[in-house]
Image 1: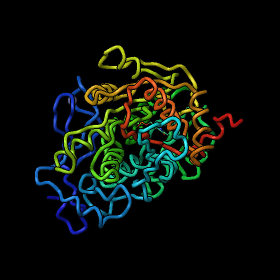
Image 2 (image 1 turned 60 degrees about the vertical axis):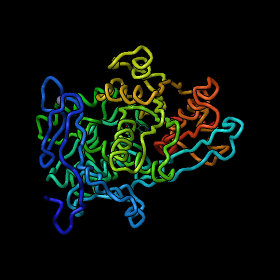
Image 3 (image 1 turned 135 degrees about the vertical axis):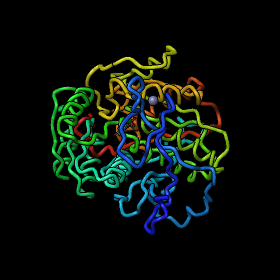
Image 4 (image 1 turned 120 degrees about the vertical axis):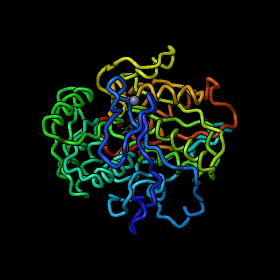
Length: 398
Ligand SMILES: *Cc1c(COP(=O)(O)O)cnc(C)c1O
Ligand SMILES: [Zn+2]
């Protein structure tokens, strides 16, 4: 076994399996989506969990997402590209008690990650695995945060990064890419337009693409949120998790982590109800969920202050909808004015400057609580996916 080398991570990675058609792919070589032309699904990394793993080892590990290295895809420690991502704090709502009643309500605050968002988790995993596989150029379409994270981890790994970003994205997202020395290409369009162009150029120039859920390992990085939530809540998952859904990586990733942990014997069969929150301008998952569809329609109502939520057609829409239904979850939209107001409300009362994407969750919480979908006494976790400091240009402050 490869992981027997002295600098091995003891990763339990077995292969990449297609969740749609079951085709097994060799994880020792470069992969993108399912090779079955009729399928082309996102691939899921599969691990050998049959021998279990003693979770007591975790207490000896660093406070980063790599503390779960056996459940991550990198085989040789020397290929791990890390800037201290993950193991972010759980912070209770302290002052806005009039809204939470007898619920216990928490943030998982991802804003302290390198480059200021949870995209660091996905790109740390993807860039590490790309390094292990000998890749020298990585390209991605991005609504902002993924580009900055790719640029930083690629700089660290001495890999070339090429980033396609909508021209309407706030300046800070462009500047950070240039500072980390990525090649930045601004596109007069949305992230789907960026995706199409990256795809064309990647094929011509032999670049590796890490477009959301068309590359298997960003999902593995983001799933570590699920492991952390279990560990930080003492292996009792919250009743409800709210997630601001763009491409859906974090939602699908957490759900995958819960399954893996149950197989490892770390948690039982109880699962949180998963809630997808979208921007009113890009509400394809909400519409599909509420009308009983298996896939979503392309939907783009234009600019939103939550750049990360402007994803007109998530590649893994089927998987997102499946998680929502399997968990007895919900899906709802929040508009820009509501997000802006929530950023201010949380800043003023809780001392946290959260991203508009995270702020959408606070409004969603209030709606679900007043409709009694969230019940008395339930424990609720909201994932603040990024730092509000990167969005000041998008916000009305007065
Ligand atoms: C990318 C992003 C999201 C959406 O994440 P997905 O994995 O694409 O669903 C939410 N919030 C922020 C701040 C983001 O950068
Ligand atoms: Zn397939």
